Image (cartoon, rainbow, N blue to C red; front, side):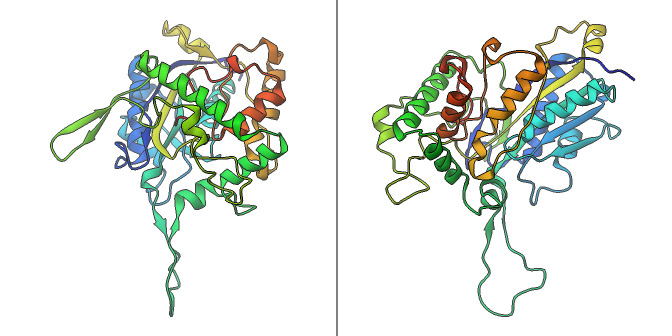
Length: 349
């Protein structure tokens, strides 16, 4: 059976909490439930009308069976609605959206909730003790680092991959800091102008005395300057050659986001005006030692599938895990910086 074009009818997120910040004690599935519930409310869609829920999540150790299913049930979806998790590291949430769109195009679903949920603050430390130990100490592994931030093939941190990119694409420390400063300034302007207000769903957090609502991103640093950025030491290469710092890298954070996907036919039947339509998507693999350059082949593929040229695209949101990788991607694709991350899309979070 032929499916229908997939459209996005609502999109929401939580504020982004800093490591051990205001969202630190809320499990990822609680954050996911909050955005899923709000996405449905805004589109005036009943929970029982959802055909499927897909949530990206990387750090699931100790979170219980199928955290996506936990989010679905807490958001009020009936048990009859299937829910499952997607793990593709940084791409997990966006991949979930693509999977939802694919299900709609294949006529396997009409209404899909998709997004991502993560609480890095709650990532546990782990030790393998199944067979016990006769003598000596046991080392606890930080699952946030082991499962989320360390390349499984080269056994080094993601920051080293950014150093590799900086070296191969000749992205200087000054280039990285300048990009980071621009990203900080854009985030500050967006926050001060209330740009994020509508997209953020308030999250209620229990306190010792009552509750508080979290509605503001915690990680952006207002008043950032080149002087402050240039004073920071390299985080990953300590031999004097390092260029990647805490200032030109993204943070370790907690949060969730979700979109409600619907077939264009279903949206029309419900008299819902979509926010956007899904034209195309693509994915590509690169050598893990330069993992941040994946958007280069992926963007080219997605644009080709859409029948467009890169010049025809008005706005790009490119992963900003590290300024080095984003600068390299922009240069390689020939994109003007004014078309990228107009409100900041990673370094500040």
